[in-house]
Length: 309
Image (cartoon, rainbow, N blue to C red; front, side):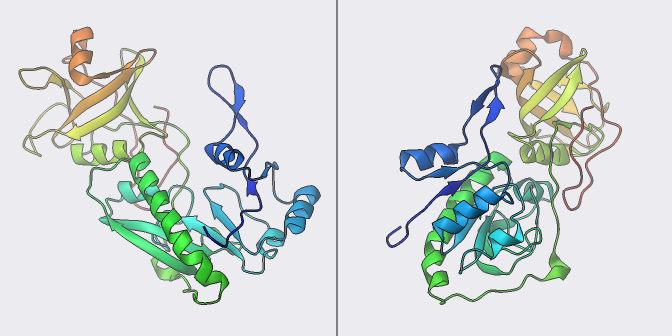
């Protein structure tokens, strides 16, 4: 961006990832290094050394995106034009760590990205600018997150100059409209007793992270892609029972209302395959009753941390 100098990138320390447990840098670090931008990786932002380094850099503004930690007051007050946060929702709806998952879980028709002036609360600061988009109802959280952060990059580029020059005002958030999302850490165990439409929405919300699964023959079966089967929504059946899908094969599961097509699955220890290929390799799954969770994800405000079974 003309007229803007990025003096440093701050990102968490590299963390072990994969079977070798070797530390892997985040993509933001790799991008910064490729552009010869200094990278700082403090374990937290309240240590004397990182505060001194930030003060030495003397930034006019700090921009935060998906950092995952609260900024201490000393950092918030450091830049003369404040700390700005790109948040992938239309605030005050879906504050917190999982706004994209929340938007899909709630079946929102519209979402977007907000640029806000940070305060000490969790996504509670006044909004400087926002941009919205309609949802098709078929997005996964991974796809939607990519779209929203690309949109957020454009919003930041359009807003940063006018903000620093004093041409943008802030709009306080309406607390009466606020909702808060929660962090989902573990794969979501499927409750087959709820409608197929609801299960499909949850699987989209939890893909690719933290994921969705069921149990068959004592092994975890990951559901990577599912869709509501084109049959009567109130067709009778046995909850959790696996049935053949059409003359070409494939998998369907009977739910509390309607049936769900398992389009792409991965059995524990195996590779991801289509439902049709899975039946060919594991014909014994037809007629099996898949395990149903004892409790389901609650409907509002993004609810719980997933479930192990």
